[in-house]
Image 1: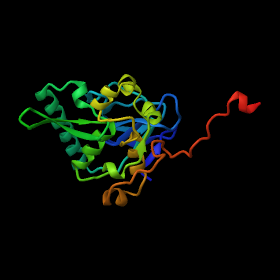
Image 2: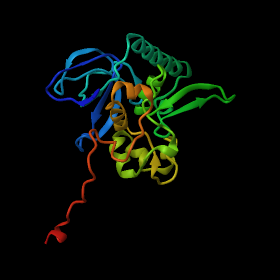
Image 3: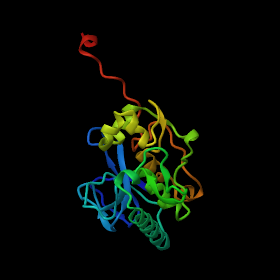
Image 4: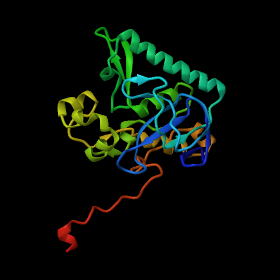
Length: 236
């Protein structure tokens, strides 16, 4: 399968393949995804890698960081170049519209247009996974079903793991709405782990159609639900 958790066995990574990072507190929970900014002939878990990703803001070739999972189609040379073009276009939109990090980022939906007063689309907002999804759609590879009616719903407990840098916004209903999260949830959201599952399929299947996410796919590989911890009172 063309998706793996990294370990001490080296894998050859090409530019613009998908890489994922784990939660700092929950094993195998994929909290962030981006595009490999550099080729690497033998990447292992012990080696950092530069990424191009939606932080926010959009960052090209950010400082090397730990990578825990990797997935690929694989891409043709032309597809690699076309994804580079997509990144250039998004960056140019942000520069032209002077888009702040807040105007670059959204949680739901995975991608949303930003419009001027006359209705002209000036740029697009993305989640980290949404940025990768739309980069691949740009070259005709549809990785994930993103229709809100088809996505698993996600509660606040999972959101806090998925968006550790957005805790202040998650705690405030008004700020949550700026991220596309109306009400108290749960919400249909594209989570980062879904990208790895979409790539854990044969190449022909990946190119044939999008993956339908399932509850639990926020982990890669999927983990069975864990029972709640036993309290001290119950234990006695």
